[in-house]
Amino acid sequence: MKNKKIIATLGPSSLKKSVVMKMDTLGVDIFRINLSHVKIDEFEKTIKLVQTWTKKPVCPDSEGAQLRTGIIKDNSQYLSMGSKIIIGESFDIKNILNIPINMSNPKDLLKPGDILRIDFNSVIVQIIEFNNNGIFARVIKEGIIGSNKGIGVDRKIEFPTFTKKDLLAFEISKRLELDTFFLSFCSTGEDVKNLRKLFNYPIKIISKIETNKALKNLSSICKESDGILIDRGDLSRDVPLTKIAFAQKYILDTALNLDVSTYVATNLVESMINNSEPTRAEINDIVHTLKSGANGLVLAAETAIGKFPNECVRVVSNLIKEVEQHPSKIEIKYLLNPISENIIK
Image 1 (tube, rainbow, N blue to C red):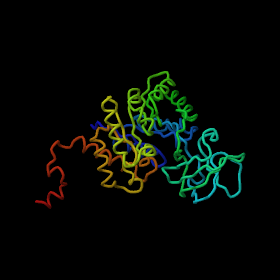
Image 2: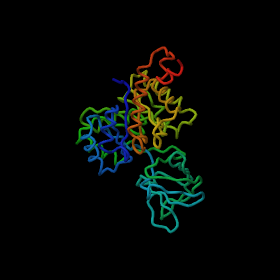
Image 3: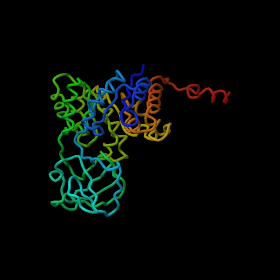
Image 4: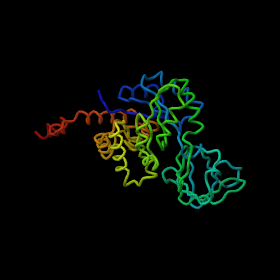
């Protein structure tokens, strides 16, 4: 029996009875429902449905304090260089695109001059003007944006720990007696305490580390949490890509010293969104992540929107078994498959 855990995110590709049941058999330990990508009026139905397919825990992942795009028509919009757009709610203005966001009061949050980086710098815009028609911005790096994509701002902005949607989902979760939650954009140990206060029974909280502030308060977050999830994607907005591996090692070491379980997400087998096999680099990354002390791995886009959700779980499960069973001293016979062995003889 494997000790390392597999957390699989459910989405359009995997929210099916046959897929969930197969992933369960292949070794998934927790099924994750990302609130950022589930409508609140579908949340309860989704949880109940998945619970009829598996006995494994089905756990919500909060939206958390992050600026995001809203629902984009056809889930894709190209923004050309130099074009003028409107951010958030607006009156219809001819020939100007309107990009919705998930905040109802953007004028209280943003200001002229702010630079917004949408979906990991896929598109960059700068706010140029506020008026009665809305918030106007200019595209300074063109590209394609989609629905529910994260937006980074080039200055420090304080967001509430929970969105209105989160709070509604927590109320539903209480009715369903759910007891494990992923806390997005956790910044301090107090955030973890505040989530516990919303429930009148014990819950487990896996806090997601994805900002500089979370890194600075890592020890306090670990002490209040039942687990830590390293979201390498969102964390790379604050930490340079060249330092992400070192940030991961720092978080793993800190959590290990405080005896807190740690899980790692983002780009584990990203190539398998469209391909049936991982790259050698992905395999190497997973093996080193597990050997560095991670207690489990999180499949996100790979199982939520990818073409091969079951194959992703199979690959990760097999790699976990290899890591847990490999001999302390590696000999040539361990490395060779039967065909290679026959050729060498």
